[in-house]
Length: 474
Image (cartoon, rainbow, N blue to C red; front, side, top):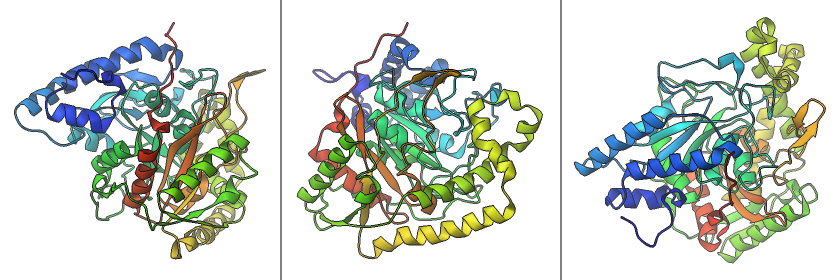
């Protein structure tokens, strides 16, 4: 067994994989360490909606036996993970954090679930989200919203709230979220972890509750960029049963992490955060950009105009598609949805087909504008989020937070609209001890290059290795 080493729950995928491969650590011990930490602390954070302790223990014992018999599957074998609760799990409820689906138990796994199991991963449970990945944070649902491990008086972002919180709290080394306009990257930004929104179609969404079908992505969430590359390897690939799935070659993402970015030309979209973000965010992101330059990258300014058109276009498309997805239940059982979801979705009933089609045309124009810098730049960087974690505020209708569609402005949305790979990773902390994030984006299917840049930054910094001090659960 490991000696003079961090506790098992502190280890990431890469460290656990080597220990499990060499049989220095048993998957059973890793799962027990994670379950014990969840039991001790998650009552204060609400990151999980469902824990499958029996299933996790059974899978861990099976993994241990396979590895002992010489049937090691690769670096995800024996690794515990969590799934956002809008992703199907055979025999285990998938609620989308909604009363509407509170008793839904799928018959089959989502493609991403199946791939993680096939890689030897061990599902610990399902994590909190905004209702149907849009209506939150809301307190008028069967389960409360998740809290931020760095300070439970703050929120963990969304809509992959529980996945971000569980990672930061060291409940799991890996999680899956979904991202339509920033829903893996916002929690990563304010929880101090790593998340990748991949190229549209790189990861199948079959078996995932739709939000905005033309913009939805699944994405890996981890505590380091190296771990993100290992998890992406397990879940990327063509799914012939998903019509949006891209049939594109899958490289060795971990092999791309050379630690070298000298000579890369990186465009800095400073206009999207300077003057818009909290001053502490601007300072931290500027320092991260300077670090990339110190590592040998050719850092150049890029002007992509105002953020607002990207946000407005995405909001129009999402509002139309969201209403279409939920129209039947909104008409027949509106009281079973949260007030927050109704506020955000019902406007879709007023949109015309002309509005939707014009928004799709506008999307094409904006995507072309966003792609233009890649003619001369390898990557783009900007802030990962424009503020630190929102504080929970007691309002007349219960705890509320300012509407995420308006403030802070969503610096994540342009890359969602264009379907480009975008990585959020920690780059500092505020004076109040809350995480700050950098965002690195690339052209289609350049995940390897994006991850290479993020990994080089993490080799030179230690922001990602810092841990919150957790409260005991009541």
